Length: 210
Image (cartoon, rainbow, N blue to C red; front, side, top):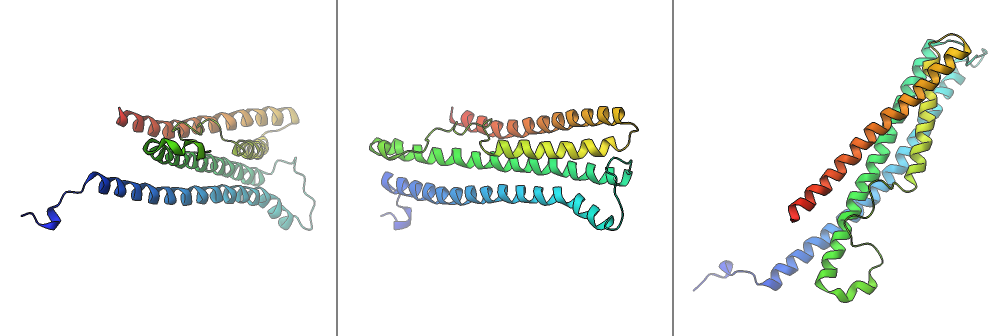
């Protein structure tokens, strides 16, 4: 006679374990998804604070003195370059949080599809996607406008800082233009690598299913 602990679970027991696991996973993912949304808000707010920092500092240092922003103050230029570089890091973090949010959203889609495969009658009650390719990695939604705004301000900060090491308005304009182009180029190269990393994770999942 077999011991009670040696009894093999039947199909219904296995399915109930799977359902409990997926429901718990669904709750954890939904909670993480919301936390990532809050993180994006905090990153953008921190960007605004960082953008105001140089001007706040200048207001304190030059409280009783006149300040010419077109003068070649290298210490001021370095400050703006550092802040502009910080803007790029914050922008990359913002997009990374958004892509992480998408990864969790795709996972939730698969959980919905699991229950849809179990019972097709619930199809009429599912308004959210059940496909693993939604949302698209390239479509950042409203975050795209935040990203573009952050990049524009960051590029202007760096351009102003770089132009401070040159003489004459023409030279300043040339250096500033080159700085803006390089700033955007570097950023989009880094963002493409980040998107490729998330996409590679999706491809690994698909390959494991074949």
